[in-house]
Image 1 (cartoon, one colour):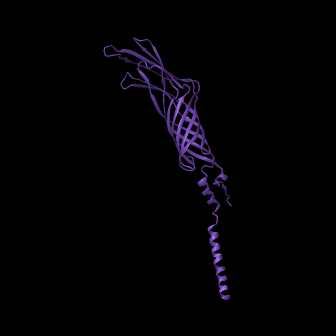
Image 2 (spheres, rainbow, N blue to C red):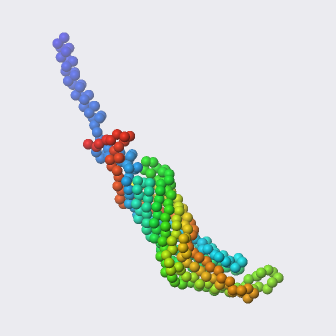
Image 3 (cartoon, one colour):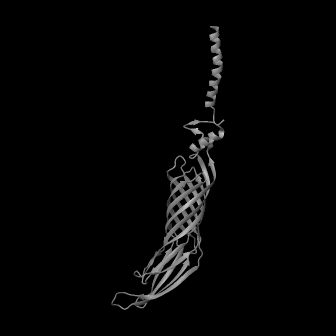
Length: 289
């Protein structure tokens, strides 16, 4: 019997340390850096406090001047499409709000076509000014939870275009207008003079944007925006002179009203996070030791 009890004691002394070592290895906590990275990847997105970014904006903008008299369809105001670009500095708060402002190259035009020629003659005048932009955004629908940065955004803002009163261009057109096939053609002359508004021009903006998170540092946005010109930027005065009719006046006013379609690349250069919240999982606060 003494030999049997002695054998049991020896077996316990050998087996228990081995089992104890296995349990300790199984429950050994991972390194601090690995645990932090795992928690930050899983829960760190929504806990971003704010970000600072720079953005390069490229877009195609359309605008059409308002015409008050077409001289019975003799000429018309044309839609003008031009490429523009801008550079923005922005701030994002909790990945749900954004405010950005900067500089944009966005000319405003007046363009008219004389319809009595084949092909029609077109005359364009441009206010080659740059604009200052201030825009706010709100996240409507996230498509990349929990990160939130990818999704649909609603934006609104103001554009300010400094002007200087100056004459930009003028033209004169002479031709013949046909009333019907039995009447002799009537000769006419169109004279125009274009000048810019000496006061500052403002535009209001409302748009939607789909933003895609490419990486921690880069985002890509695709946008469509509607712009309303609140004040006139460029004016073209037209005088119509004909033999059988009295002299008439018309005016084209370009305020920049139109649409904008573009793409924006953003680079985040500074990010602040709520690190304590990243460690708060399902209401239980954990600590890295």
